[in-house]
Amino acid sequence: WPFFARTEIAGSARSSYVLWPFHVRSARFLPGRGWEERRVDFPFCAAIDGPTRHTRAYGVGAYLHTVDETRGTETVAAPWPFVVRERRLGERTYLTWRLWPVYGRSEGNGIVSRFYGWPAYRRKTQDTDDFHYERRDAGLVLWRSVTERNDTTGRHERLLTLFPLLRASDESGRGTGQVPALLDSLLPRNPGVLASWAPLWGLLRWDTRPDGRRDWNLFWGLLAREDGHLIGPWHLARTEASRGV
Image (cartoon, rainbow, N blue to C red):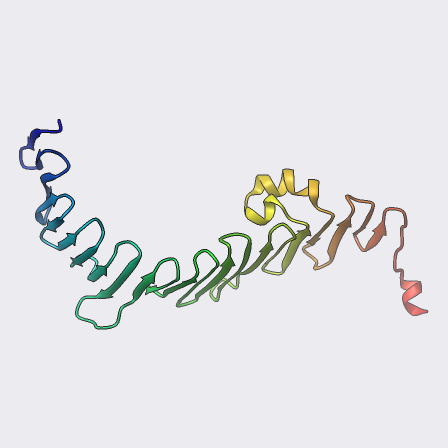
């Protein structure tokens, strides 16, 4: 190495190079499909030829064209990976179009994704039969809004986070959250963070009981409402007699 080498595994794979990585040849056997060969003449060109996939690349990411019959797609990138287009074989409309980091969109299997000025803003939706999902975020996790609904089970969920100010969620009618929100706004589904760390900086926290009553806690218990009572420095309760007055 790096002047010359040759390796062969009978019936499985073979490879060779001269002055690696400038001239490289390799092949592997794909069970049930046949041999797939790869050729690299760095930095000018590279190619993949197999039973179901064919790729041509020129320059170091300057241009790439792939036809993948297994996935049923055709991909063109120039330069890769910043400008990428992908469409189904035989179609004219591109389902994926990316000019990174300015703009990108992709569609497939009921999932639609968009980004603008990555990571400034992203949006992802999925509508498949009875399942509906939408996520929007800015700065990856600095702000996010997630909604999810299953029409068959009736389960629905909403999540809103804004670092470091807010975390609010609603899972099938149970609303929880707190202000401010540090690690729990970045990791809102981590049980360890929610149980052990979030209460340390939660000036205002709230939760919903199974009967629909909402409890809240202000200034680490200085003032709170539990079981329909205001507790802390004051203890006020609404009785049947007071309701009739």
